[in-house]
Length: 249
Image (cartoon, rainbow, N blue to C red; front, side, top):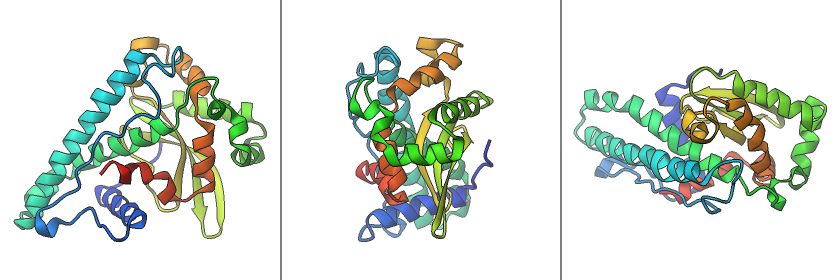
């Protein structure tokens, strides 16, 4: 499990990729008591499109209830923070930081997760849609089967709630792939990190269908992984990966 990023680091990263995506518009303009107001991004498929691997009931609750709650809470907290900054109330500013971190992470992670999924049988759900990524996976893990086994082991090793990610780590001109896990709603926003593929390991992502059989959920989710999106993120930049968030403002 990765270390928990500080609130300051999270917000700095949040500001950084927002500025990169649209340098002409800085979302966090607290001087006028304004704050970004996020909206629920639509799914690129119907709620029942991932059946039988993820049920329509889970998808509807997960998207329209759980994700929406993170967004509602985040918007309220950002508004409170903007007012506190305007009033120079440092105590009030500090009091909302943990909530901003948690709910912003929930919005970031879920926005990325929906794009990581595609209906089983679609061209996007075939690893052939990610030739360059698969080539790099084979270079690191030997073959696709061994990679999936390593990823699954990381997912099942998460204690409590969290996420598993395949991340592209960029250091100077070099890049490498790594499997990492994050706790609760901590997002992958470290310097030089591009989230390529993420899997939600909170119980609300699978329990209604799989009960305590999360190993079956982990195994079956590979049937609906969007390899095309993973390929685009692998070949792209951090700004490319997080563009879905800019669209939700």
